[in-house]
Amino acid sequence: MKTDNVKRERAQRPAGRGIRQSMSGLHIWAGLLMGWILYAMFLTGTVSYFKDELSQWMRPELAHQAELPDPALVAQRVADELGAIAPGTPQWSMRLPDGRTNSVYAFWRMAPGEAGAAPGRRAFGEAAFDPATGGKVTARETLGGDFFYRFHFQFHYMPVLWGRWIAGASAMFMLVAIVSGVITHKKIFIDFFTFRGGKGQRSWLDAHNALSVFGLPFHAMITYTGLVTLMALYMPWGERTAITTPAERQQLTAELNAFIQPGKPSGQAAPLASVADMVRQAQERWGQDTVGRVTATNSGDSTARVAVARGEAGRVSMSPQYMLFDGPTGRLLETREGVGAAAETRGVLYALHLGRFSDTVTRWLYFLVSLMGTAMVGTGLVMWTVKRRQKLTDPKRPHIGFRIVERLNIASIAGLSVAMTAFLWGNRLLPAGMAERGAWEIHLFFAVWALTLAHAVLRPARTAWIEQLWAAAALLALLPVLNAVTTDRPLWHSMAEADWVFAGMDLMCLSLAALHAVLALRTARHRPKPRVVPAKARGGVIGGALEEGRS
Image 1 (cartoon, rainbow, N blue to C red):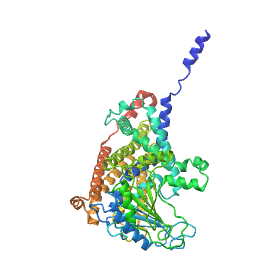
Image 2: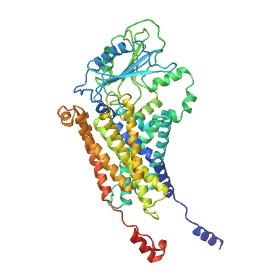
Image 3: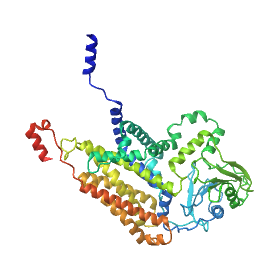
Image 4: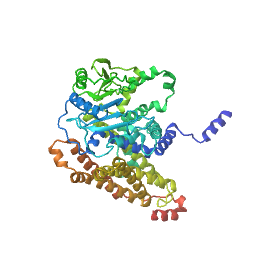
C-alpha cells in the first residue's frame, strides 16, 4: 500500500525539464544577449580574409603589379630609404610584397627626442614604399581592410583592452551557443537536408539548422581559436607564475614573434652589410617567395642585428621562423625554426584562425563558410522575433522588450551592410588631402550605422527591413560605377589588365547587391498568415472568431 502511494505521488509530480529543454533555453539566451555583437564580429571577420586585397582597392594610387619583384632587391631598396629617412632609429621592420600586396609596408621606432616622439613613450613612424624604386609612395590616407580586421576583435571608440574583453566574452557566449545548440537539436543532421520555404518560423529554423550544421566544425574551430589568440589577456596567471625572470621573458618573446628587440647601442658607427644578400640566404633555405619580413635593430651601429623572417603562406603555424644576422658583417648568427610544444600549439591554432597560410581557393572556402556563420547568427536573431511575434497578444503593439530586439536586429543586420558599404563610398568621395582622412572614413561608417538604427526605430519594422536592404543593394550596385568615375581603374580596364583585385572587388559588390536585392524582394512579398487565437483565450467561440477576423 505504501509503495502504491509513493508511485502515485511520483506520478502526480510535475515533470522536470529535460536536458534538451534546459539546453534550449541556454542556447536561445546565449545567442540573443551577444547576438548583435557576434554578427558584427562574424561579418567584419569574414571580410578580413581579404583585407589585403581590400586595402589595395582603397589605395587606387598604387599601381597594379603584374609580376612580383625580386624580394632581395626590394628589401635592399627599402632598407636604404629607411636609412635615409630614419637615421638612428633603434628598430625598423618591413613587410615584403607578395601576391596580395603591391607595396612595402614599413614602420620604425622614433629615436628619443625626435619630433613626434612623446617623452617617456615609444613612438613609431610608418609609410608605404614602392617596391620598384624603394621610395615612399603617396596614397590617400586610409586604414583599408585593417579597419574591419581590428574592429572584429577590438571594436572602436574604446580602449583596446576593453574591446578585446568584450570580444572574448562574446566568443565564450558563442561557444556556449554552439555546444547547447548541438545538444538541443536531436535531429540536427537530419534537418540539415530539409528546407521548407514559405513556412514562416519553420523556414527560419530550417535555414538556421542548415547553416549551422554545414559549417559546424569551422564555427567551433574559429570560435575556440579566437579565444586562444588572446589567451594571455584572458588567463594571464599561468604565465605570471611560470615566467618570472628577464631571461625567461626574453625566451617567451622569442617563442612568440620574430620582432627582435634592440639592445644598447655602442655608439660606434658601422654601416649595414648587404640586406639583399641576407634575404637571398633565407631564400636558399626556405624558397624564392617565402621571405615575409625583414627587421633591423640599431641600424648604423656596430651592435646592429638583422632578422629575416619566413612568411606565413604555405605553413599552418604562426610560430616565428627567422635567420638572425650580424648587421655590420652580414654573418649568420642563428637560425630559429622551432619552438616548444606549447608555443607551437598556440602557433597552429593562431594560424587556423587567421587563415593566412591559405592559397586562393582555401581563402575563398574560409570566406564562404565564415559568411555562412554570419548568416547563422543572423537567422537565429530573426527567428527569435518570428517565434515570439506569433505569441503576442497584439502583434501591432508589441511590448518594449520585443521592440528593442526587433529594431536592433534591423540595424545590426541590414544596417551593418549599409554602413560597411558607406565606408567604401567614403574612401572614394572624401578629399584625398583631407586632414585625418582615415579617421573620417571610420566616423562615416559609425554615423551611417547610427542612422540605420534611428531609421529602424522610426519606421515600421517590416518597412525598415525592406528599405535598408534596398539601400544596401543600391549602394553596393553603384559602387563599381563610383569607382569608374573617381579612378582610372574601372571594371573593364581592370579585366583587360588582369587586375583581379579591382575586378574582383567590383564583381563581388555586384554579387552582394544581388543578394541584398533578393532578400528585400522576399521580405516585401512575404505575407504572414493570420493568427488563429483559441476561442477560450478571447471570450468563447464568438470572441475567438472576431479576433481571428481582425488579425
